[in-house]
Figure 1 (cartoon, rainbow, N blue to C red):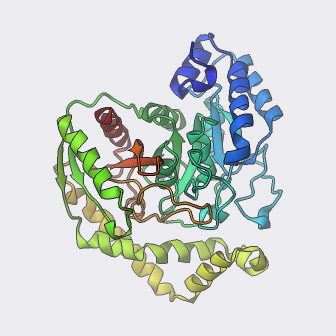
Figure 2 (tube, one colour):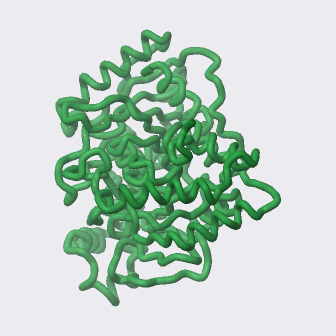
Figure 3 (cartoon, helix red, strand yellow):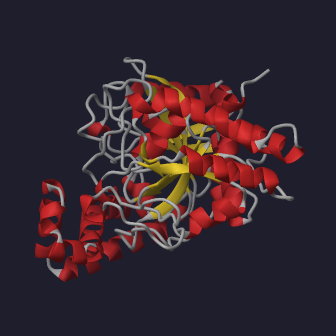
Amino acid sequence: MTHPAELSATDAASRIAAGTLKAQELAEAMLDVIARREPGVRAFAHLDPALVRRQAAAVDAAPAKGKLAGLFFGVKDVLDTADQPSQYGSPIWAGHRPRTDASCVALARRAGAVIAGKTVTTEFATRFPGATTNPHNARHTPGGSSQGSAAGVGAGMLHLAFGTQTAGSIIRPAAFCGAVGFKPSYGTLHRAGMKVMSESLDTIGVMARSVADAARAMSALTGLDHGPAEAPRAPKLALVMGAMAEAGPETAPHMERVAEAARRAGATVTPITLPAACDAAFAAHAHVMHMESAQALAWEIDHARAQLSPAMRTNMDWAMAEPPAKLVEARAAFAAAQACFADAIAGYDAVLTPSAPGEAPEGIEFTGTPVFNTLWTLLHTPCVTIPAGTGPRGLPLGAQIVTPRGQDAAALMWAEWLRRALG
């Protein structure tokens, strides 16, 4: 018999709804995993087992069981929780206790999820990392900025977790930690109760153990069916390799293997080059991200500058020294790229592209570069990374599926098709 902690989110929630598994039984099994793995992984910024047990008991007592009943859902610590601290990865906000949940957290609770704890984020979901390690090798980074969420799912301590992405903060850490990461279309999950940094970019998404589990979470949170539906046929995939100059040596042969597996399963995989407008938007990303972040952190910069990391102070000083017109120009570059992307991949079902530059880098001081994610974030498209084997050091590698904005269910469908093709 499968141990409760090893059940998929879909199976666990279904058993709880059917009455063949108690949420309290599942909670004890998951807390045992956390007790074993957390000292090395350090995924949690806040963890209260007694609170977890009370939530599980409430799930069992409820007459109706939601779609996420009893599931352990981690919350990245840039999202507010009414019953746990929300500290945004910064000493400035140490001990902060909001009065309300973020919208996405409230919706997860409404669907029956157990909010297992707050997961470690880099400072304000930017670059300065926390203490989290990669669950597959503690000498390596889990990625960032959603590092605790990715590591918690990858270590089996969580069924699901919220992440946020401004450049590559869902897809890259999920790939590094061997998890599924889903960044939905921009604006799909409401950002009320989030410590927003970049108004034009920040997107809330989920991490999961499988595509089906990610789809279940999104269906529960939005009320819209995210499948994943059975693909009607093999897809036509546009292969976009992106910034290969910054990729590890394992990335090109890895993507060749992924593309060949897709072809053997019947897919058409065609290398394409995106329009110059996409390159211009990619180059403009730093201006939008940092200049909007400098606006978001106006209070912290003015009143608590000494408690910002040196890297954050450097980036904010640079952003504030740039002329305001640069932000207007950069946003216009985003709009131009967004306007041409659907036409650029017309005739294809989805884009196939690397999830990250390769395996997770050694050391936890650097979370890796988001160069294989930045474009898709600014285009506001849905993106899915799936585990796709391991690299030369035995660490996870991912493969990423991207579809046009609004085609979220299709992105999950083609990601599941690719997962099956990879075996």
